[in-house]
Image 1: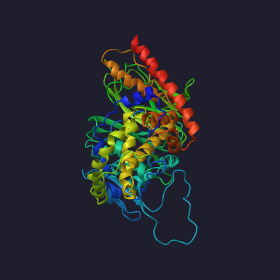
Image 2: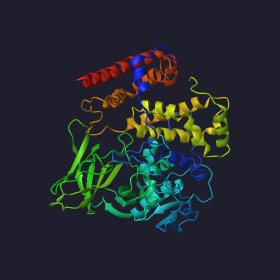
Image 3: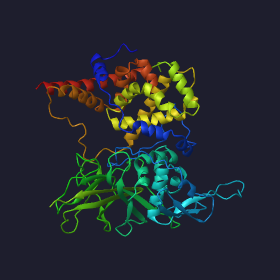
Image 4: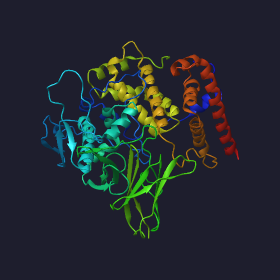
Length: 353
Length: 189
């Protein structure tokens, strides 16, 4: 025991009341150590003495601070990845929801490059099959359902190279990241009235490759506040014409931060925004020097180059919607593209009469 | 690292049950140590209870997966303490990779308070003082003044020279005292 303790600081620290864990902490832990869950994460070898966990920081300013319990539905989705080549397979979740995915023989790249061929003896066995998606929606919904089911193999197949690169840059592994992602995204597999909208950034501005933001909306019933919720997840087209989800296409140094400036985040309601006047603007800020894309009420996106902000090291993008906004609830989507970074956010705000 | 707790018979039986595949025994096992571990994580992470939960969730999952490597002659409390401590450092490292908010108003001091709110405000002051420290100073002051490690032990844990501990401690204490005294004066107005 140290004799060199500062009595004032020691008392202050000892008197500090430490809060209990948040709601659902122990349930989440139990879910994570459930045997069926553990089977899905076999190989995530850990050492208590190692520096560094295998879970990266997946950060967005408006990420939900609650942790919806993972939907550990082991059936159905996992069965969809079969060792067949170029044979269509239907993924059927236990609520009857279908997404058309295929299996393919080789990895695909988004830059058109050929995957490296290993040197040495020729291996005659077939390469492992991987799931591929033909549409942005199939990629994103397939990824969400796989994450919700704890199917790290399928979710990994559908995770794009930008996200994989970011995860690697953080020293994490893909499987562990997907497991972690179940907290924030897995609950989408249980949303009964789930609907999607695609916002194509390719036609909206100077984006040189095919990027689509898939906006998922529905009534959230997992842990945390129930009610309408919406998420925006990018998808990028591969050189082979298929699509991959890019939920973590962040810069290794800057992360995926995207701050919504207008409408202002509400103080009282988690994930909510203050109301706006009919002639209000939308504004967002982000690190780097990229381009913002704004979409309002499912309309095509408008590209807005970021303008530097004085002394803050980032950029802002301002969008002035044409005409006056009507008095009702509006859905807005903001995407930010800066080199390898693609960050997207979807939310709602009300225009008061 | 010093021994934080001893592996009692109850812990030993729970460890055996976990190793035998009884997953329900694991939460029971860590709950007996949770309060102390929570205190460590809460202070290291400057009172951010969301990050405390995230770090401890990661730590407990890691402990569960590594339970077969836990030696019967070792101390469970110390072993868990080490895992939670490492998970908190990882959380701090991850946070470093995140850019600061564009419009940061974090830790803006609330207006003066009085009466029954004073006790709550005292806790606010401690958390604000912890948050005002760079990570390396906060970890040092929590280990020495909060957890009772001596300089040499803290140096070994952090992998730095004992002299570094002394200098970090000196700066950390000065900053914390400044924040605490400032807030106390404000309350006295």
